[in-house]
Every structure is written in structure tokens, then in C-alpha cells.
Image: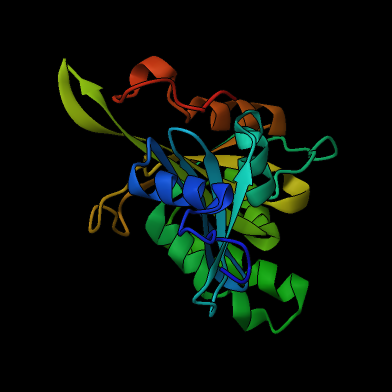
Length: 240
């Protein structure tokens, strides 16, 4: 009551009422997972009947910050959360890389062994990938540079109550991307999202496709359901 969230007669302030309403009956749940050098960060957005609420959580912090956002700002909020940047200067002669998750694990396992020596680290990654047997040139050189320049891997997942073949069903869409800094953005097409626990192993295919930031924005927009896809009364504030 002292901070104005509850009135004298016990009524909830609009900001708290909207938050609790969205939490109690979400129409769409959006989760954002960002894996970088400082660990894994989990954010998200809750789309309710009357409000859209963004939340951010940080490693080691048990609290989350909840912020109401305008429905038309939803895609912008998601792009901001994953730090989507202009990539006009990013160039690559290779636009598709096919390898295995085992090769990726081998490359990542030697990253710290170079002890800050860029040339040594590059050689270690190339050796690890060569020993793994994949990929071949020119993808080998490009993949080596991607691992060297990898800022973060991020994934956005949307879920809602919809219909499939006329039956009520949980609907899920997801997008997984590598942010490789000066080498641009690469969509991870395989393993295909959403990934179930135990579904991916060392022999699983890994496919990365170079994708410009404008197309990434479109792909984020496509993750959101249309109003007619939702089960629920009234119209949901999910306009992009």
C-alpha cells in the first residue's frame, strides 16, 4: 500500500493488475535464452488479454524485472533483448555450413587452450575440426572464424494454446541464431527447434545459414501467432 500498488480499499493498481492478469491467463509466452561468455541469460515476454509484459532475469539474481510494453513494440523488444545489430559490414564467401554437433563440441573445447593467443587458438580449432572430420574447405576456414568470433548463441521460443488438425493443442515456434560479431548472423537450421531433451548427440547434424539482420527481424516477427491462431475470448494484443 505504501508504494501505491494496493489502494486503501484493497484494489490493485493498474500496473499490478495487468501483470497478474497476464501471469494468470497468458495468451502467448515468449522465452529468450542467450548463451554467452558470462553464462546463460533468460528473458521473456508474456502476452495477456489486456497487456504485454516483458521480463528480464540475470545470472545469480533471483529477482526478475517486469515491464509493460506497447503491443506494437513486441518485436522491437525481442530484437533489443538479443542485441540485434546492423550487419552491413559483415562479409562471407560461405553462406551455408554443414557439420556435426560433435565437431562443434570439439571446437569449443579448445577455445581456452590458446591462452589469449589468437593465432594459436585458430590453429587449435582447425586441428580439432580436422580431427573430427568435418567440415571440409572452404567451410572449414569459415567455421573456424565463426567459432573465433562467436559473441552469443540465442534462441527465441513462442508458445500458445492453439489448434492442430482441428484439435486443441500446444503450439510452439522457435528460432536459434549465432551472433558472430563481424561475421554476421547465422541461423541454426539443424538441430531444428524446438529440441527435446536427449534428442541431440555428437552425430547430430549442425547446419548454419548466413542470414542478414533484416531477415532475422522478419523471422522474429514470424514467431508470433496471428490473432486467429489463438484460442481465447476477445482479441489479443500481439500486433507486431
